Image (cartoon, rainbow over all chains, first blue to last red; front, top):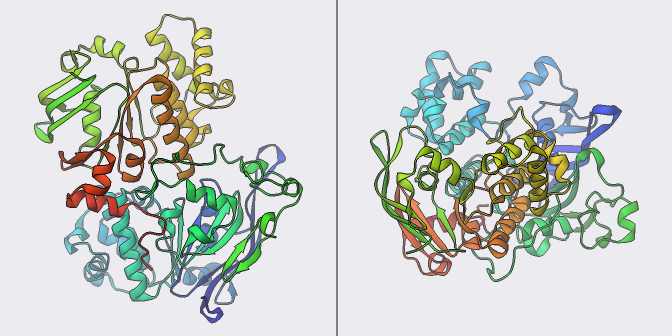
Length: 319
Length: 262
């Protein structure tokens, strides 16, 4: 399904350890290896606190991993410094969860959208209006919005502005971190329609972080399931309900409220909460919430094993 | 006459009509959902029932009658005793309703002592008992924590525990699961449904997710631009409604094995 020559961005054995109080340490990302292919979407799912946003921050060089490397077209971007790093930022752009907080409320929309273009001297100040209107049109907003401020717009409109700004530099990769989680389902859908349309037109590679596996499967070519800093399963985006093997992925699938579900059955979901990342269980990270626990799970940590094409699972059941 | 009768109410903010001609009738033990997009007036409706319309908001017509008493004529003092006892409310983020510089316990104790003349120690014990009843382990620890030290799911459980302290007849929930992870959402939804089984509580749930609404409720009201657009039981809304707007909302719920955009 994925051609190795289309590989654009690759994370290799990325680990991030934060120091914590009392001389302890918190492993937010543990040995993560993932690949982004040209024009495809990689979805990352997991509960809050599983390290998915930390991982995304490495890809946009907002933070550096403790160990491991991130290769963009073969070059390790974690080693970039100064002007080289600045120039590289044009290739990977990001959309955050809440544009009301990630943008300056005192700036007009056209200034927000055109700031990256001006920073990289792609346009002159006199061309700002024209560029802003072109980008607003791309995200299906009326050109008059260029003069507005963030607080005069709805959540969906703001997120469109954030997408317009991220795409202003025509990056190869766009990362969306919970970009639709704060929106109504109906608005969420229109944003998904927009980004998948833009992806088809421009061949953008996307990373889509979300805690809703139902939403992720509607737009991702490949899905990585993360739990307490570990990748527990990587599976193709199609037919996930038949492919999903890891007990955690299945639990995520079961906890979705679907209008097509069987309403006579009670919703099943794991009862407990994820343990603190400060004390990840020994052995399998999921062992204290798993309902098909084996003796081995408590002592030995499972590694990712290939199950089929583009399908990896870290579970002793399938080893 | 039902337990709660909302009859043809109009609500306006500073003379600007926001909700027009809204009616609903709830019996004991029923679960109602109000579904709609942001700005459709769904929160305004339950805030009106709770007597907590924000500044400038006013019910300009119609009646709200709870067990034979008109809520619209209540005095401030009457509301203070009534709220939290006969009707309670859960907000989208129960952490945001608590003072961030005070521990959960201090808010809980204050709440209990507003309604009951008990000592602080007794109120503390009652709080711990309620937390543990809502399946929050080590309630004493939680009482001594600050709201920001708890996860979103735990904060929401604390909100439910507080709201259920006096076993209200009616519980209002404003987007109770919208800020939560899907796994936690499922737990909270299940827990809210157990309230009806265990205490016979009636619920009005406001949500934008028709999937959650369909799972929980006996009756679903779809709102748009301050008016009731469509209403009926789950079967009607999901399979028989001819309303275009209901269809649009239904289609927007992400579904496993549903439409893929790539």
